[in-house]
Image 1 (tube, rainbow, N blue to C red):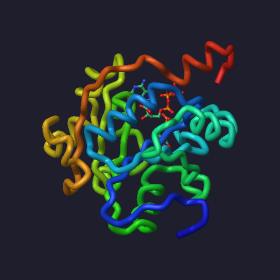
Image 2: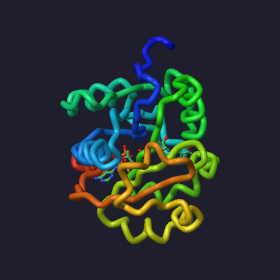
Image 3: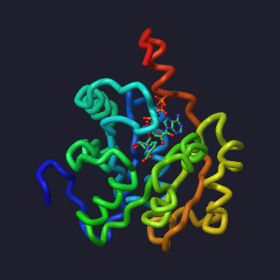
Length: 200
Ligand SMILES: Nc1ncnc2c1ncn2[C@@H]1O[C@H](COP(=O)(O)OP(=O)(O)OP(=O)(O)O)[C@@H](O)[C@H]1O
Ligand SMILES: O=C(O)c1ccc[n+]([C@@H]2O[C@H](COP(=O)([O-])O)[C@@H](O)[C@H]2O)c1
């Protein structure tokens, strides 16, 4: 295993929550805890991205964002990582493909808030992502309806699991996805940056 990468054993179910985390907030913690429970995951890795390929403005320095994320987390099942910087991947399809190669036998699940499902069809090789890993979507305020009508949700509708089967997601053949509702948090990094007067 390359140095600096987290350890995982074959058979483990690991959720990947990619994000800018600029900054990390309780909304991230909230969906992470829900994902651990609802998708019966052993771990969630926060993949703190060097920069979202679809965002024009770069985020705060990676080290600052990681330090803040680590401070916020108390659950030992959650690991904050700079995997994308280490692997030099920016596109999620490349990150997932590299992780599957580095961790054979690990059951990865891609996690995202429902706002990201609405955008998902703009991501690079998004159909390949859906073919590589099951996807767990967590409801985010104001985007549940849009997520239901999202292009990706329509194209992948045949492979949507009923919510009662969310616990089987990590072991399901791909494509497979499910959207779960949870007590929602309105927190967002944008709101936190604005409250501090930052213009990013
Ligand atoms: N309050 C929330 N409820 C549900 N999902 C969330 C929430 N906040 C963030 N997420 C999800 O967490 C992941 C990482 O989010 P990100 O780091 O972009 O935070 P953000 O608050 O969405 O930031 P920004 O406001 O800068 O877009 C994304 O999949 C996003 O959908
Ligand atoms: O690969 C892509 O084309 C792509 C496009 C947009 C977003 N993503 C990923 O989605 C995750 C959430 O991004 P963000 O900035 O909304 O936190 C993060 O891991 C990004 O790298 C990935």
